[in-house]
Length: 119
Image (cartoon, rainbow, N blue to C red; front, side, top):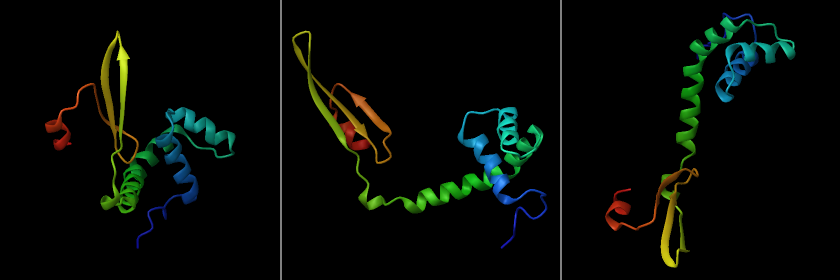
């Protein structure tokens, strides 16, 4: 297996920290530089950009690979929240479909069996 970090002066942990700070939080390159400087790591914002361009796709591929392996497609459930609400004296039926990761699939005030079957 090839070591991607072998020609760099800093440790792989510092490189990972640099890239993950830039990816995970809405920070600019200079803000990442300032945060790392406060932790005792002297690095320029251009180095942060270079490391992001070099190692960002590699880290993203590993994260995607782990996410796919953790999914259990057989046990996937999409809960449906349903409620009847009285608005201006009229009963309305509202529902919301949520996937296994908590993302909303659809919100509707009417149930359409054809549309629900396609999703």
